[in-house]
Length: 468
Image (cartoon, rainbow, N blue to C red; front, side, top):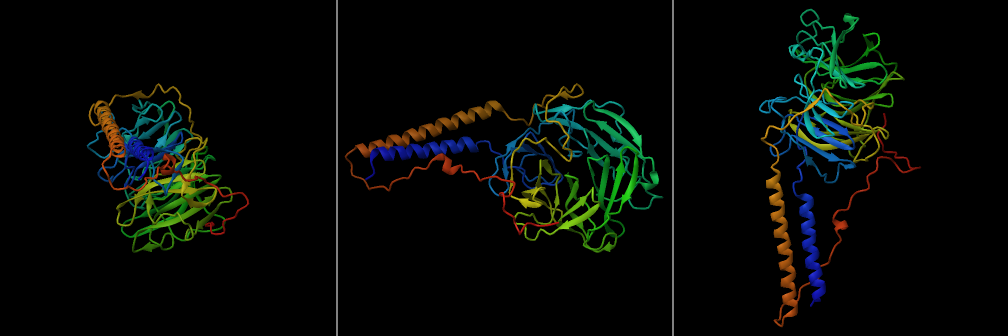
C-alpha cells in the first residue's frame, strides 16, 4: 500500500498540473487556420495574421503569436480585436488586406481602396486622416493597379483601362501616386516613358529592391488563351522610367503569377505561384500551383531556380499569402492550392541557408514587410486618430473574468476533495485494494520546448541542402 504522504502528494501534483494546464489553455486561440489573401507581418518579434478570404468557421479574423516559432510544434496564438469601428469599414462586406504594409510608427495599413490602420503598439484601430487628394476611388475603376512599399511610403501605379494585352483597347495610365506613411499625405507623379510601362499582366508581383529601383516579376494573361510569363521589369525612381531586364545568364523554365517576393542581401526571392508548366510566353492548356523557389540576383543580373526535392520542411505546391519577414527568416501562413481551396499551415524559409526550416528565432531585428528600413520605435502620429470599438463583437471582460474565477474555484475544490478523500482512505481501518504508485512529473516535463535554431552548427556542412 502506498504511503499516505506519497498518495497525497501525487493527488495534489495532478490537480496542480490540471490547474496550470487550464490557465495556459484558457482562451487559447485556434490560430489562423485555412485562409487565403491574408496580411501577415512581423513587428517587434510578433507575427500578426490579419483578415483574408475563406477563413474557416471558428477561426479568428485577427490573431498573433510571439517568436521564437516552431512550424512542427504547437503554437500559442492570441486573438486580437476584429471589432473594427463602422466609421472605418463595413464588417458585413469583404475587407481587403491590401496593401498590408507597416508604417514607420507601427501602423498596419489595410483596407484596399478604403485605407485604415491598426496601431501595433497601442493595439487599437486608427483613422489615417489622409490629405493631399486621395486617388484610391479613381484607381478602383482601373485594372491591375499595383502598389509597393518603398522606404516608408506606398507607391501606386496608375493601372490600365481594361483587361488584356492590347495597348489600344487597354492602354496604361502613366500616373503614379505616393502615400507618405509618416505625414499620411498623398502626392502625384507620372512615368516619364509611357511607352515602356510593362504589359498589362495579371497577378504580376512587385517589390522594392532597396537600390532606387522597383521590380515587377512574372504575371499572366488569361484571355482568350492562358499565358504565363517570367519577365522582369524595373522602375527607376530617380528618372521615373521603366525598362525591361534581360538577365546576363541563367533562366527560369516556366512563367508564373501570384508569386510572393522577398528581397534579402541583394537578391529577390520568388516563392511559388501559379503556372502552366510550359515555356514562358507560350500558350498553355492548364493551370496549377508550383512549389518552386526562384531567385534574381540584382547585382549579378542573374536568375536561378532551386530544387527543393530534398528539403524536409518544404511546403506543397500552392499560392502563398503575403509573408512576414524578420531578419533572414520568411514566414508563410496558409494560402490556396489547386482548385482554389484554402490550405492550412505554417512554413518558414531561411534566406541564409537557402532552405526551408522548421524554426524561426526571435532576434533584435527591425520589423519588416519587404522593407527592412521600417522603424520599430513608436513616434508621434498626429495624422492618425484612435477610434473606439463599435460596442459589439468585442470581448466582455466581466463575463470572461467571472468564468475564470468560477473555474478556478471548481478546480481548487476538486483538488481539496481529492486530497481529503485520499487522507481518509489511508488513515482509516477499512481495508481497501492496493493502488499502484502515481509517479509525479515536473511541469517542465510537459512544457518541454524544442531547441529553436536557424543556423547550422559551426564546421558542419549539410550536403542535402537545396542549392540554387
